[in-house]
Image: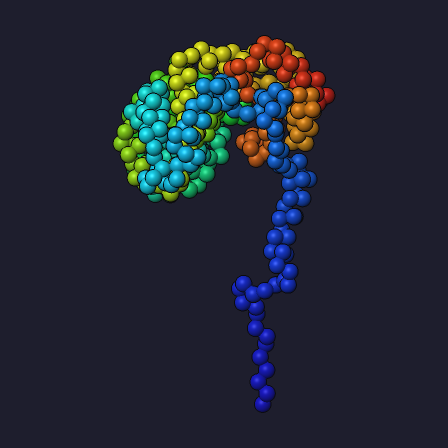
Length: 404
């Protein structure tokens, strides 16, 4: 009798195509989907002497090219070298890093600070090191992607709270079963530039024994006395139950990030935060530039007032031109666009006319509404403000949400 057996099914991982490049064919399909949705993103190099007026970056105080800041960066590179050479726990901490941390903490009214290679890694560190499986994280629905990713990486239970709603946060905390809780919010939300109700959120957190983590990326240098930040403006600087993260790449015109808070929190992050332990330290040039900018801001606190003044002027003039502009709480102003493709075209028309503006589309905008985003730099002249408004209004789509 002949033994006939059915052919065996291919094992998992068996070859399905002869062409090795076929493994990434799916990328072409997803790229086509993004293109049809108007969500294609491209890199554009710019020259050092770009004549376009830049309202797209986050140089809120106009310090990126300030002679005192660039000289501080150059001096630091010449003294310490081009890189930090390793993890800060091994070789990457210089006396310059320590000096920056001490002065940054003192400026913001915190006990201590810890500098990271970016604001993104600072947020990941705070969220993953200050939580565990017995922690509830209550995160604002409009929080920045770095906070969202930190929540995803944390081992905690995460609850997404309605935007800027302290009462909803309190209700969530009241129902928690976890031993610990952490309320997480941006201080100023990067899309429309509206400020979080920090004092009310802190009160809700304290009522239920929770800590408060504030990402002050868009508040440092703009809000608070002399630009000391949104935490200081809310009367929470130095609070024992509040931790603040900041970036050095916006108002301070450099690169990097930091966590500020109680000394025992900073010690815990130094010993446990993976994005600190396993990451190369911030380059000396960036640390030097941030320190130079911080000292300049401390000596010239009016720069923070001017950034807010420019933001209010931009918003008022855009509204007067018939555009749907946000009311700024700090230095971010946005103008609504009819849709993703219209926003891209509008931003491109602005650039051709000599003005660089941000273009925010899904998934970068939590409410799904595309926008132009403007940075109200504190070094803008009244003539430049008028020129920016004229260009935006002249290139605006004829109909749609961009028009008030």
